[in-house]
Amino acid sequence: MTFRNSLVSWKYPSILLCGIGISNFGAWVYFIALNLIVLDMTGSALAVAGLYIVKPMASIFTNVWAGSVIDRINKRNLMIALDLFRAVFIALLPLASSIWVIYSLVFVINMAEAMFVTTSRTYITKLIPIEQRKRFNSLRSLIDSGAFLIGPAIAGILFLIGTPVLAIYINAAALLLSGIITLFMPNLEKDHPLGKSSHYLSWTIMKKDWGIVLDFIRKSSYIMLIYFLFSCMVVMETAIDSQEAAFAKAVLLLADSDYGFLVSIAGAGIIAGAIVNAVFISKVQISYMIGLGSLFVSMGYLVYAFSNSFSLAAIGFFIIAFSLAFANTGFQTFYQNNIPVEIMGRVGSIFGLLEALLIIITTAIVGVSAHFISIRFVVISGSIIMFAISILLSMLSMKASNSRYYQVGRVEVKAGEKMEV
Image 1 (cartoon, one colour):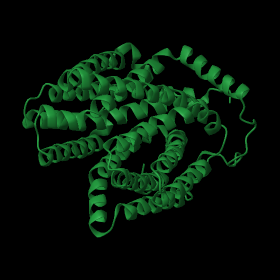
Image 2 (cartoon, one colour):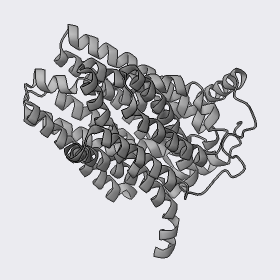
Image 3 (cartoon, one colour):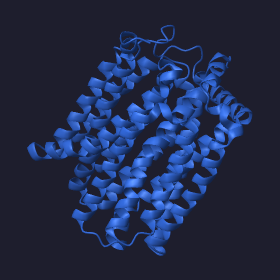
């Protein structure tokens, strides 16, 4: 491929990455600003914690039916509509005078976000050629890492020159810009404009769709087992991370400044991992990215859980952050290459529903256990469970007899299969 052809082939992926980057940077600014607004309004840490419950609750409510909608209508147009929808509702947040109004708005915003995540994953799979997916996912990981590191810094600067309200409006503008950028993306489903579908959404259609997904799970048990195990890793990460600040202060006895430095080390690990991942992506097999990436993530959590000093905790944080880039890139590519795009919305929504339920249950168990037993015991136990899951995941993904699931040729067969919609 010539340099000119290479530039042409990356034109739309580059535009899409630009839109994703703008949206992610805005999301971090919004996340920090909203926490401060709620804390200033109520003076309650519990009220802030309520924001963390709203997101998985919104995912549960949305993912029951969202997949049936996503698979039947125009993905690009839906992404644009969801960006604009979120921009409007985020802009309304500073006008809210009650914490319950804020919770309601955040619930609706997170419903739209849950739909957007699944829709964009399907659109990306349709847009990005098979041979470019690993590279695209590695670059997206780099952008996500940059947002994680730079987003809070931008928020801090905005708080110095303005208020959290200004930061909220900045995020609304970022989503508006992201929607405009998406307008320049190719319309891959011109015959399916937004809002037009061959079926009206009904209980009968939803039951049929669940049946289609269950049938796919039965026929593709290995694919869905890898999906489930990786989701379990995410659940355990979320549950353990919910005790991160308490562990740092109550167990490691770190000052606020030390804890802030610990988070900065994690940020450096994320950036380093994403850069190494992007540079060497063509030389690493997808199966090893998932297997070894997940294994090292869990090992990082073990180092962190058993640490008794800042230095050991910092090493654990760096290992976790560095390895996440490989694990996430490998999993996203595996998902795109093995789930038929015709039912990707339904599969993603149903498994997103399961993941959200597990996050709520596991985080609640971890929180209660930390309160009544000990934070150290809970973090160590959670890390050991995660390590066991990662061992099973690495064994299954790197087993030679399963190599066909990680080959590009398999995607072409999948894409050609006729799936019921």
